[in-house]
Image 1 (tube, rainbow, N blue to C red):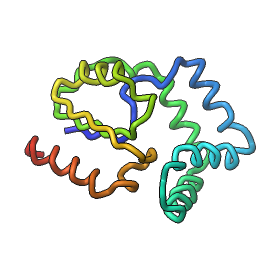
Image 2 (cartoon, rainbow, N blue to C red):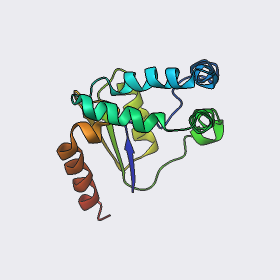
Image 3 (spheres, one colour):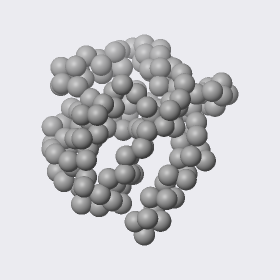
Image 4 (cartoon, one colour):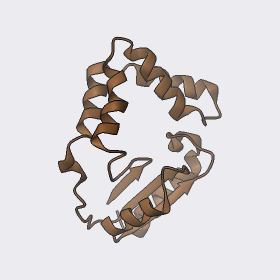
Length: 146
């Protein structure tokens, strides 16, 4: 089986849009840029200490590692709409980014899909709502005998 947690199965934008997004992370003020990005994806976290802990951990990522991960998303080979034949659980933070069109796209890729969205959570929904996340994950594993 495959579990996707607040991640995308298609490009987040055109190559030009992604390049524009990545460029500031290459600059000498990487820590400042990364910090602002992290603040954005952790803003919904209710516990300030947990939010700070996540930010501290993420800022330990060397610039070259973060940039190379973002650059890897520019490779068109990883975005081919290959069918996924195993059971798939997609768990997402409710967002305007995850549109009905996106859900239909994912359903086309993964016929054995379970698709869930969580309200009032950050990108780190497993930290924001651990009981709900674990329940969804365990139910998926049990249902699919994984």
